Amino acid sequence: MSGPGTGANEVDAALVDLPSPEALLSEAALEQLDTLDTDDLRRIRSECEAAEEGISYARRLLQGRLDILRAALDQSEHPDAGQLLAALPAIMADQGHVSDPAQARSLRVRVPADAERYAAVIDAVITEDEVPEGTDSDLSDLERVVGVLTQVEHELSARRRALFARIDGLRAELLARYKDGRADVRDLLG
Image (cartoon, rainbow, N blue to C red; front, side, top):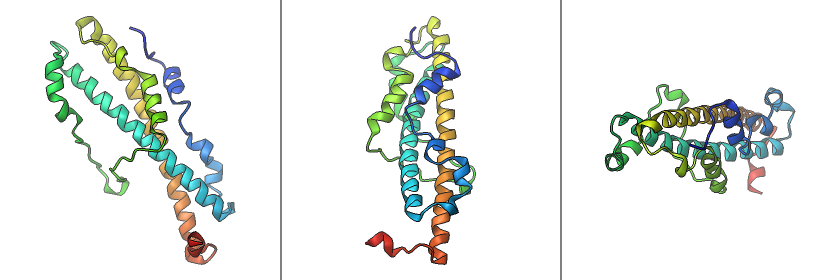
């Protein structure tokens, strides 16, 4: 089977076109937000929010594929496409929950304006044609594909967390400026 490799290079190559939290706002700049102009803070916050929206979208696309492939692995002794198709609504039902409510974020996934860009990244990791058929000889390929997709999902999650840290820092700095008068909300209305 052609398709995704098993190494970190494959994961890095798949994600090279996605926004990098560090490129949007470095760790050093995150520690010195008080030195940035208010307009720059707002612009960077908007860029980070747009990047987070796109990363979250890509992550949900990937998680859907992983859920389906893991369900196929669960049926590994005698995979049956008909059974898998019948189980699809249950497979795709969102069973996730957040164990720490303080860490909860919006569960609504928005489709970003450049959704095709994010879908293309996930498609580059594995296309439908590259998914093994489910025969015994393909099960090891299916496990490998699930492994690669899991690595990509972990990296997307890490980027998402890094973006949230930046967004939270930017919002806190803007809020502090609004509270102490260094920034005026009326500037946003004019």
